[in-house]
Length: 440
Ligand code: SF4
Ligand code: SF4
Image (cartoon, rainbow, N blue to C red; front, side, top):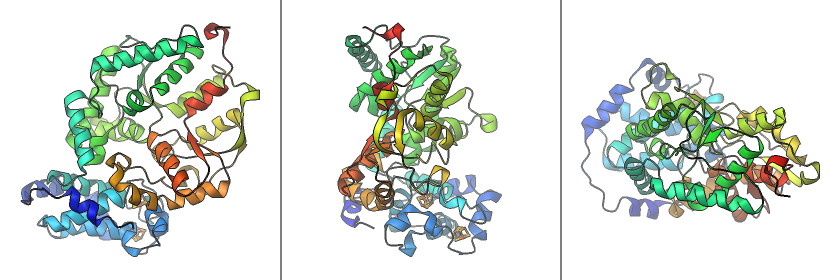
């Protein structure tokens, strides 16, 4: 593992050293069900989970990076000590919980007892968070969520201005492309990652062009538009619940049929699967249907609502990054593979792939933790870099912002000569422009 001691010393320099043990015990009590007790006691130390973990594989198979070691030396130890831990111990937990596990859930697939290591590491994050021990950047992003409802702290007027600006930008090439805000009773309420209005506004206009081509009924909400959930990764379950409630509530208020999620992996996990629990909805089901962008594109192509120009199919070798929370944890790996033949001539799948694909190394909140953690992120991404290199692909389609950024960083670090592209970029570049939006 990359040396991160200096980074951690900087992270905790002015930290308060008093722990509130009662808060830790409250979290332990709240999670002290049969499920966790069984997981903690049943592990036979068989080691089958080790080679499932990309962090272990990427870092010379260090036994301390095996999933079993990680949960035993975090939550396992905290339960054993009945919460009476000290700060030095929790700082070690911090390193394991945020830098050595992205909560990708691959290891559970190989455990003969189905022990869910990621869930236990997530509880360890909750415990660290309760003592103010959490990544500073994730705490700042969470504060933005608390104040503005999105992790970049973007005010409502700024989002609306960006939507207007992006709609105008399409006018040179297309006609009739709109970005409707707060339109009631649309089919889709389109939710986005705050990185889009700030760093990739083109992503919003690309989405609008695709919606217009497909003659879709859609809207962007003025609030509740941030589908991401960085508080969930910061270990702040309460605020994470508020983030998903913002989206569900706005969807109900606008009377939309479905909530559509942009190309973001953890947003899908948050809104479709963990959100109802975080927001304390009975039955664990979201109050409105949640659709990921991969599924939308698959449906549009299959139904002929958008068509690809055969001359514009990608000629270079292409591979596909299965984002953990879209494929393994979201079930959309086959839909993705049915999209590829429409858009690429030379597809080369990574091995392993689909639900068994490795995390890119940028998930679980480590990407937004900032540049101080890049060395660790690059070291853990070695397996992904080797997977991509083995395909010989020059383009990696990555329908997740974290995967996208991590793969471009890995390409530079490991000299892969490959670049990540979003589905939207590929579709807008290659689709046949229908008459109803064509200017020519
Ligand atoms: S959840 Fe993923 S990163 Fe965490 S221990 Fe398991 S395989 Fe490794
Ligand atoms: S595979 Fe399961 S039982 Fe075996 S060491 Fe890993 S967590 Fe324990």
